[in-house]
Amino acid sequence: MRYKFLPSFVKRRGRITQSQEDNLKLLPNFLIESYEDICREKTNFSKLILEIGFGNGENIISLAQDNPDTLFIGSEVYLAGIGYLIGEIQDLGLVNIRINTGDIRLLIEQILLSPLRQI
Image 1 (cartoon, rainbow, N blue to C red):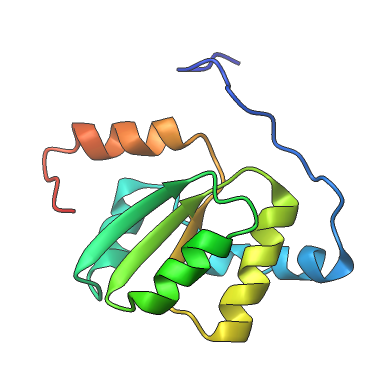
Image 2 (cartoon, rainbow, N blue to C red):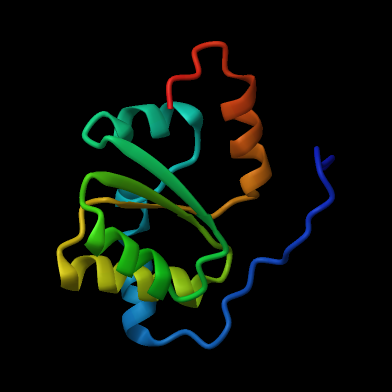
C-alpha cells in the first residue's frame, strides 16, 4: 500500500472505557470523510472551524457551546478521545460538531483542490 504522505501519527486505542467503546458505535453519525461531507453539513451554519488534534475534546466542546452558528470539525486519531467527545456531544445536545478520524492532510488537500470550493 502506498501512502500519499508519510503517516505522522499512529491510530491508538489507548485505555478505553466501556462507555467510550459504546460511544464509538455512534461515530458514523458524526463522521466527516470528504469535502462533499463538509459541504452537506455546512449548509446549516454560518462558519466552519477545523480543530486538528482535539484530544478529549474540551476545547472544541467549549467553542461549540459558545458558537452554535459555527460548524466545528474535530480531527483526532486517538479512539478514547473520540469516544469521550461523542459522549459529551450527546450529553450536552450539541449539533454543531463533526469528527474526522483519518489523515487530515488528505481532507485539507480535497478542500484546496476543489474547483467548487464553497466553504
